[in-house]
Structures are given as C-alpha cells and as structure tokens.
Length: 272
Image (cartoon, rainbow, N blue to C red; front, side, top):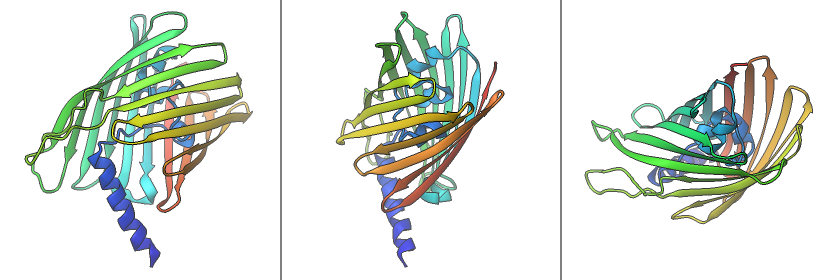
C-alpha cells in the first residue's frame, strides 16, 4: 500500500527538480561519493568541474546510466569524451533525463587549460532542451559554466565551479523562466595513492547550502571502495570501482529515506 505513495512522491519530487532545472551529473564514481567531486579529476569532470580536465593526459570516454529511485521514467543516460592536446584539454558531454513523452537533454562543449603549475581554469558552453507531452516542439536555451582548481599542497586540491551564472532559462508560451545558478566549492585531501577524503558545499541561487562529503580507499591495487553522505535531505551513497587494463567500471547506490535506492553504473575507456 505504501509503494504507490512513494511513486507519487517521487513523481512530484522529480517535477520540482525539473522546474528548478537541476544540472544532472554523470559518473558512478562521483555518485558513490555523494557527487562531492568539484576538485577531483576523471572522465566525468565534464559534469562537475571542467577545470580538472586539464589534469588528464590521455584520451578517455565513458557511458553512464542511472535509474532514480528504481523508476524507468526517471532514468538518466549520459556520455563523456575527453581529449587532451598541446593547446589544452577538450571535453564533450551529453545526457538525457526521462523517457517517453518527457525528455530533457544537455549537450556541453568544454575547454580546460593549465595556466600555471598549480592553477587550472575552464569554460563550458551548454545547450539544454526539454520536450513535454503537451507541446509539439521542444524548448531550449544556451548557457555556460566556468570552473577553476588550485593545488594548495601535494595532498590538497581546491575546486570552484559555477553553472548558469546568467540564470538563462526556458521560454515557455505562458512565461519565461529564469533558472537558478549553481555554485560549488570544495576540496579533497589525498593521504596517499590509496585514500581520498572529499568535502564540498553547493549553493543554488534559490535554495539553502548543501554539504556533501565522500571517502574513497583502495584495499587492493585495482579495487576502490567508496562512501558518501550529503544533507538537506540527508542521502547516503556507496559504491565500488574496478580497473582492468584500459577499462574501468564503477557501480554506485544512493539512498533517500522516503524514496528508496537509486542504482547507477558507468564504464570508462582510457587510452594508455
């Protein structure tokens, strides 16, 4: 009897998220770390902080799938491609949220550059579109993201990122929306090659600050275990990752007290 209630609650929660133009993220590694990822670098930095792409020195690509609360209607599929060059690092990202008559898409093109031994900066231009069942045509808008990282010490890196600072939004027939800007600031401490501790704060222009944290450690050479927690509302995350030659695979689960579990998986290819 309680399951239909949870499904309805999930439905309205997702509609609220869509109304605020949630900037969805990709990568099961970051999902397992409560998406406290603004200072961390990997294939999915195109969805978190493009400045960390400058730290990558090899081509990589990945695909990601997430089923929010286990409901197919709220599925998220994403991909990311990273290409380092002598002129800087380029990134291409895409996601689709939703299935059937409701879909939301985002296409991003990023450029990241190492400006000094410790400082990196980046910009990404985004094209976002939304298709709703009551409208024949999709609505769309263009915005951008900016990010930076600074390495304080060999162990500590700080990252900052802003999505949609100009508050662009969809032009509906009834009204024009101004979607919120999202600001992220965080840092991680690498004890050694086997332990990573992360702390991040996130602020949407129309919401309270959210604190996120994550812990990653490697009990074996190719195996990583991950845990995370974030607040308002409190969500717990966990997952693991495994590397084999040029392929890495990550699995993540997040838990919401009312809506249940969200499973996620991603696979990445790295050109050695």
